[in-house]
Length: 467
Image (cartoon, rainbow, N blue to C red):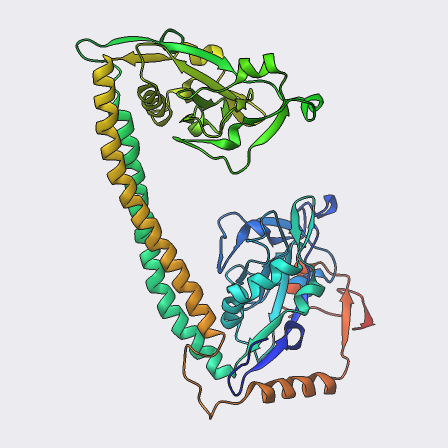
């Protein structure tokens, strides 16, 4: 742990908060008589809540008292498929009365020594996020945290007054960064829409003098790749092959190229040649037919049946074919040929072959390709600049958090009560606490939540249990 300023302390979360799991949703929890609002993982994002879709759950005797959320509780996501999202958290704002939470959310209730918003900010900072990624267990691709692991998280604890100053300062900085992020998002949307319009307008389907319109099958040759099979995972003729994961728009990603056994005669059938265009046969509808031109890298490579290969005829420049296919993808032309299986859209070779394909003279093809490339390059430069600015804003946000929780963002005040005294008082209060008695009522949670006026001993029975 790094050194902290005077008056600060490193603490375990369990020293300054009460950590508790939530309610597992089971068949008996179907909301019928005693239904209550129920927060799920989908409602909790990093530093914010999404309350647009709130489910309900059935509660039983005594559960509302145990699980009801209070304003200021921190809700931590217990499991996620992405290590970057594990442990994301947001403070409950109390906007929905009598709300409870599911077991995949862990409730952290801060003690008086800990400001709720400070806890949210430090929890979502790179300092804690890196620790949570290290300790999260992974089962079947799902990263999970436990309440026990959360209790052991180490937090930098400033004096309470300084916590409030840090929160105020960060909120001012973050509000400006949020305004900038919103502007970046709008600019990127506009630029991507402009890029799409350039591609669609670059290839007029009605054509001009000297143009002709044929089908894809008449413009070149269409082939489907080789089907993968477990028997071909090993053998004497292992060769690299490309699949959907390698083919992006106008780009082939070679960072993860797999191999399969291709006997020489089979390999010749599926071997790619420079100038071949690969298109995604299966994708989400808006990306169906996403095309890229194979330019010879990697060498001696084949392709699988998740891709279609187009090999241009003698009167078609491969770069022109790529432009036509990009135009069709952005115009939604391929999605009109879609068939859906298991939530994946497919573009069959038969349907692809029947799609229209405009062919101008070769010289005009090359002129249009060059002109469009120049225009797209300008848009791409602007997109890159906006994305770079957005990354710098994210880096600035991370830097502000790092400075804040190292004690370098706001000045220290020697008159503030040191964190050590706060902690000592909390420990003393916990040690001196006398075990209380609570009652378990036979009334429903709604009856328990109602005003007690008019209720007599005849209205319900109760038994006393130790805490």
